Image 1: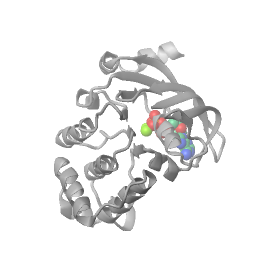
Image 2: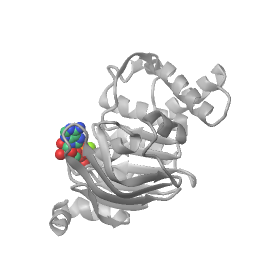
Image 3: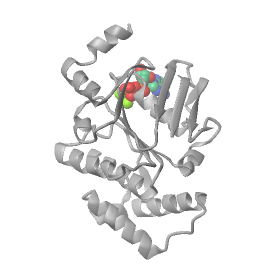
Length: 251
Ligand code: ADP
Ligand code: MG
Ligand code: MG
């Protein structure tokens, strides 16, 4: 599904290298956790996957379903089936959430050669997904993310993910700012998306989320490289010992 090979990326503006040779493979059906101390490059990795242009790739490659995506812009990557739920979801004033969903879903369908959804079918899908996430339909009449609480923004991200049915889901710190009930609801939403032909990458600083979304594989990113990989028990070890040991070994 995803193959990141010796990926080096720097900040376009000042040339600072953030990713310094990331290697990572994600198979279809797999749930992968990427952990690591603050500042290790986790969010940068998600931005680079999304194709944000404030970063430059200087070496390496990103393959999605066997093909390099480096030359694709963010919209093309989304159409191809890559979805990123951001750590800080952007507010879009003037665009009702519902309208945003309709445009996004129809763009996705067009890219797959499918017809536009009829309004009743669209409404039915949105209502069902919102219900599963315990979201009030009235909220969806408001501009996307504007005035939403932290937890509401995260739910809105998962709502989009459910409706767009991507092949690769990347969630950056979806747990940050969520209380335990919201965390459970969001995790259930993500777990419902598990499927043999979809892969999910969960980026998190804390182990807590991984009690609810149990990963198959855990990778630790530190100073722009994957320094340790293991099964779900690695997250539990980190919970006990913190990142100090891994940071020491890496040094
Ligand atoms: P993490 O998500 O693991 O906490 P980030 O990817 O957010 O790490 O950041 C990695 C490092 O890169 C940090 O030191 C951060 O300050 C720096 N960084 C990332 N993007 C930028 C940017 N656009 N401008 C300046 N510094 C950046
Ligand atoms: Mg951070
Ligand atoms: Mg981050």
